[in-house]
Amino acid sequence: MMKEIHKKRDGFVGQKAIVLPALINKNETDPILQNLMITDIGYYPNAHDHYRSRAKGIDEHIFIYCVNGNGRCKMGGKEYQIKNDEYLIIPANKQHVYAADKNNPWTIYWLHFKGSFSGAIAQELFDRLEKKSNNIHYSEKRIKVFDELFDNLERGTAKQNLAFISLSLSYFLSSFLYQECFNLNETTQVKDNPIELSISHMKQKIEILLSLNALAEIANLSPSHYSYLFKQHTGYSPIEYFNRLKIQKACQWLQFTELHINEVSYKLGINDVFYFSRLFKKIMGTSPKHYRLKWKPQGA
Image (cartoon, rainbow, N blue to C red; front, side, top):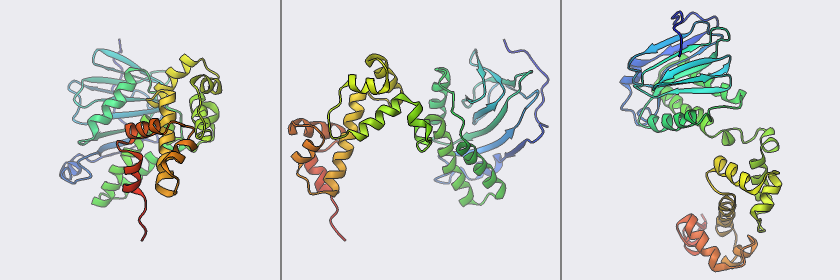
């Protein structure tokens, strides 16, 4: 059970915060801002005695990214322990209490957001919190995106500035949901991740067939454990993902080369052209022939 502590609301050395409720409400009819918008944003370093208790929650979703120290949150009858490199999401209108750890207080980047897209994003973040999949690899790039959000709000509240912030917020939040995409260019990603290593191998061997056992061996995992981790990471089985990579390559060849459809199939290691056509239609929703007719460049 979370103990009550001194209810300090602000005054942390180095803190910064911006609150824009009236302005945001005024712009809710803007086509971009009505989708996703920040109402409050801030940074609290080493936030001793930081505490919030809201019996009915608030109208916005609360997002907290902890980069150092610890904190706790109680909501929905459950208590969540938040450590460094983890995030906390509190859905709108949800009763909650949260606080920094007394002995090792958190350092947090935080924001409140709302909009027609916000519910789906908050739910996805919350689902991962529930599964304890809210651990995030620290990235200076992510912090720079947050700083850009804050700095642009400090620069002014012109409509175009708020629109830029709205779109940038989507990018910032997506970095917590799709780390492998956000960190795509970080050199350690493939080397340290067996699933990414096998995906890299798939791309290099796109023109041959690879078995599940061969892919699992690349990842140095058993086939069953590899399949489980792969689906957790990508949402697809290894072979289904490999087939999608093949069809992606087929689209490029159909669009930008003069290769016949059967030649495209053979180049992908698929000797049964009818199977290739069925697979292509299953993934792309149209046949290879119709795809080429629709998308092949017609010239200037």
